[in-house]
Length: 178
Image (tube, rainbow, N blue to C red; front, side, top):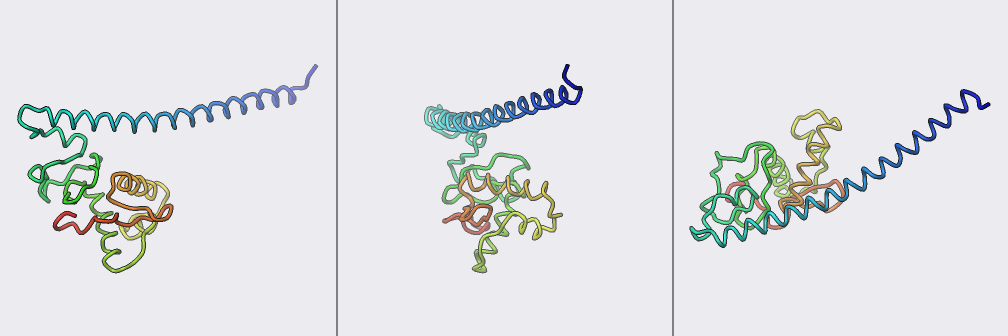
């Protein structure tokens, strides 16, 4: 008859294997989700573009704001009409003003624009958190990293080295757009 400790070890080993299997499956699903989400976004953008071309009012739709793809300088919000927090970040294009971004994103761009203007190098998210007067704790740093990565993905920022961010080529100061 097996001992109680032996039985516990067997159950613990089985549970550990199951946890490992589930973690692997969760990682696989996360990767699939990321790919599917990217594909969905591309299709949504394509659909909006087709809607814009086929619109009865010759492409003057306000739905372009949903995907963040502002096509017309007349539809750009004024500086006082900055996007609300947690809004989508539009893909950067020449002439797009910073005012289309929420205040948090504008703050990141401003500190990096100052660094470029002073001929200083890229910043890490920890350095940004310190510059913003935030507590340099993992939760705050990761929130900044998430925003910075989103800005990189949309063309506003560049990441010349892992975890170091600077303005992307062509993106200039906030006053007159890019």
